[in-house]
Image (cartoon, rainbow, N blue to C red; front, top):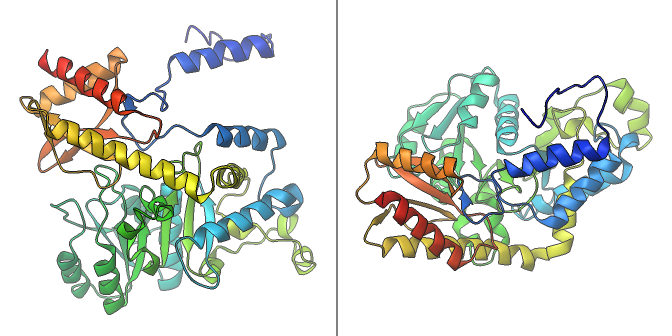
Length: 407
């Protein structure tokens, strides 16, 4: 408030002063995702090359609601989305839409399912699912989504089978590949078998774990993913993009047809017939920035090997932290990490003390850790998304926590 003063002054302070004052203020008060002790959420440090590409996109300011505003950007997006969808689906015409993230992608998945099956669609999901799934059902006027208990943290195929057998009418099952709380992956292959047996559609929210597909080491964890009718992927998580950078991928571009929309000033029929690309069906948004550019620059810069290395390195760091905590007499590890999320707690602290410890570290600026409830207890959550974090940084984190919990 002191830095801003009058938010809309009668007379401006000029570019240099405005940038210096507010950018410095923002940086001084930021939770910096590049700091190795900032590990609370699925919010990673963006790659410098991607941030630079994002600046270029802002300067050129193309809007992907009509081809005449974004000729090159629309071509880049079309090539990028087909290529990335092909990483998940070995089909003739895979495709993907660029979204603002997992929430928008999940909403689109439920919308497409509603358009296929009508307004009486039943949505089944595990209690481990992202909150955007039941919220999307509400937003779209569908019956309230049915949440199935997940006491072990993942969707139990036996419990899903019971729910499918008891449900009449069309069903969309939403599974998760990388839960928000613990980074767990539902058993996708058995879930896909059940959906096929009962004639249900399958959507997989792989916002967190989807990019494991680029790593030969970790891709097997996603077995069954390609059997989904749609899937959500976020590149601002394990893809290290500035927000926003999400995808909704489908095995065939025809599945996106319900999103077609026409407005004479943007995609007049005679322009479309003359060969100008029609972009309105690529999003529910109208004005839309070229988020595909920063992703395309990153893929060109790092290649498959470079991204796989960053993914593998990040997962290795989580394993290191888990081993460190598991061997420490004053900490309890919840479970070995599936991706890069580690849940743990001091051994002699109750839930109230643990919550206070997290806030103390946050307010003091020492570390930013998340919180999650599992097995009826509260846990500290370290979400590691910085591949440049070192084992020494994690040693420092444990030492800091040791001293703070002891006090």
